Length: 239
Length: 315
Image (cartoon, rainbow over all chains, first blue to last red; front, top):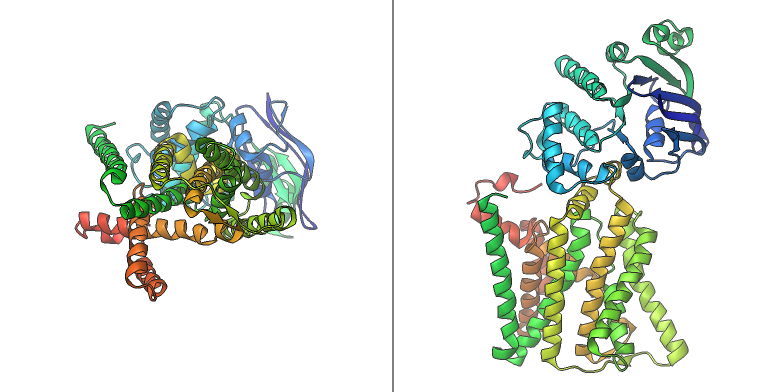
């Protein structure tokens, strides 16, 4: 089942087309990778999907419903959650308060604070932060802050989760733990669209990969197809 | 909730009720001078607590209090003759609320300094607008306000303050209080967590304006004569900021203590050193901000911890 679909999405920054006529779709339960050189428009595409910015033209649909033009909090409540390239938790709040906020405000029907706290504890346990509830979020290590950000996004009960460079900046052990976390999230029935520069990670967990370059989609396919794609090789390795 | 928290909250509620009862006794047992002084201290505290309600958690420094207070003052001046006092205060509060709703919806997308400058501009705009109206249509500049006895002013001001305290406390403890904290920490992340940032900011901003308007409506009756320069005095925009910082913004009681100490200090300096009053006031303020970054409350917290945690007291 098609859960997220973009049709001819375009966004200009001044005269520059950051995203240009991009078509894409994500099916229920998939892990889709979004790759491309720096400045290719990956994060801009995420910002378009999550409602941080509005496309100049094109349509976004979530389960057949139009998502285009909805403000960020409505996109979140509709069921599309995200994390950020540079971690954006609420540093001066407790770890549990970070997650509870997502459950109270980000879910479709809302939640009482008590129920949200229980849900929050369960999610902290799921991402491997059990026992850290009372810690000030800003005191966590980067790897743990990233997990917390994922937990906060999950607390909004999303159907689609957008992960922006979750693995970048982690050491090998942390990276493999996070990759395991991503597949466990998928096993919960949540569809994942992820931006990543770490090729090993992308190739091993994504069923399908979309390649952006200069704001345009230049390739799409399985990891095997992408690694043998002439255009992709040319862009990444030069010719 | 564990027993420790319950006991602590019982103590602070008990303390709050005790203070309100003691204040309520001031007109009965205190001198008229004490009562008038206490009225203006409560006014400062009310302005500061309403200011902190919005600007504290969100970190958006509003310089609009004088505009909302002035709105209340002018309501009292123009309707005082026709309507009973409670209604005048309600209209003043509602007027400020609506003005804030309008302004908030237009400008709360502004960030940081731009928001502060705009809100300050609102004070000047309101002043010129009222001045223009008075000169053009009523052919006068000032107005006389219906005089009310000092005891009534005191009790009405105290009542407004009590309602404000309960509102501010409930807001802070509610899920919206947590959402406002989140907005202050990272507005964009808050929006992507499902918080309707614009609506929540606008409503909180308007709620704080409501109490500033009510304060202006009752205090105007004490001043008997007002004109646009008295009603929209930028002083009332800066005082709440200074008093909140002076008392310590991080806690609930900090701003109230700040306002009380500030009010007493002002009165003391003004009566004892009328010529050096502003100079001394300035020096005390500079010293306080330099050495007490967390305000008076920060000093108490530090002292309680015995200086142990002085280094990680607060961000």
